[in-house]
Length: 461
View 1 (cartoon, helix red, strand yellow):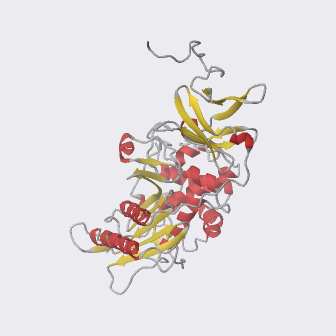
View 2 (cartoon, rainbow, N blue to C red):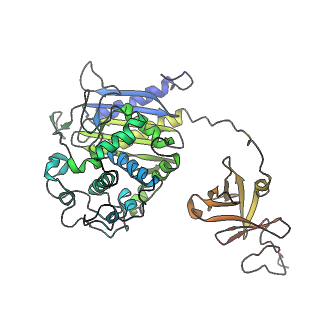
View 3 (cartoon, one colour):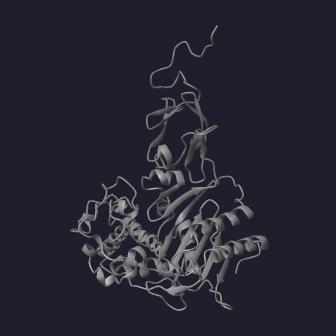
């Protein structure tokens, strides 16, 4: 239960219920269930169903399809954090002989490995996994359709390879590793590779008539790391909290943040639509809001997990139909409803526990040529350098412990920032990847590249 301060307002709750009611009715879904997380806690759950007197609660399992990929990505990041592999490694280094070994691990995570979207042969989502017992059966004779690393091309076989990578490095089945290293530590007791009661049945609804038929439920076999999982609104809400804040039992905040960063070159249409892909997470931008998460589908089921990180709001939406409601739009709307109706209340401003005089000396305005920037101190002993007004290059920098800082984002990601001092100890200028920032525009006392006109500033007379 949430405390009164954390509970949603009645009007917000009604708006959420109205949105899923419209989605279930207009999308003709046999049932639809949803949950909303705010500030790290589930604050709302709602459901709509076509069955009188029954409504699925947050403990009913639905198949979540490709949201499974995010779980697999977490396992791969764990291997990287333990030093067992590097994301730049070619797959061949760890899983030899696949025919797709030139793809990198990062490329597989971000769908830039050049692989086909689907497995050859009959539709793998509606046929037994026993038809594809080995990786060769999943990949086919020509697994690569595009040059490795050149374009984003969504690939289900790519995540099958990542599952095989986990098994090879851990020496245990993907399912067992997932349960031991992610599901149990995060308390996701209702997430599993096979359905556990209570669970929803999967249905296909006729496109032109209000009738439906049952969809087959197949074990995906080798393709399991790409889409096998069943879960609940409650479990996925907890998973959303993890993807927002991290959990050192599984992945650090920094590694989770890395998953949420764009990692693939976007197609032209994706740029126009504000879409990108990270490491096992989809990224969208619209209406001034950045959303991360993943959608999923298998015959009989649709699923969506959407997180508004800056708003500290997340939504989970699950339905048991093959097609119908656009759950990604529903998830985005649930986040927007809460974020706009009840904006996040910022933490109180607090001064730093102590003043670092050497760092404080660097705070304030700096000039790159004639462009004005400001350097601000951050609470973690880092700094932020950004234009004083308007758009332009900005970045946060983390301290290296030796009086220098390393860029964390944007144009200056990975670049070194250092304060250059004169013989008397005073600061001459900032050096950022060869760019010189001075305390006044084209400071004649600083080593400005190209020198400074000895006649100085002047007008036209």
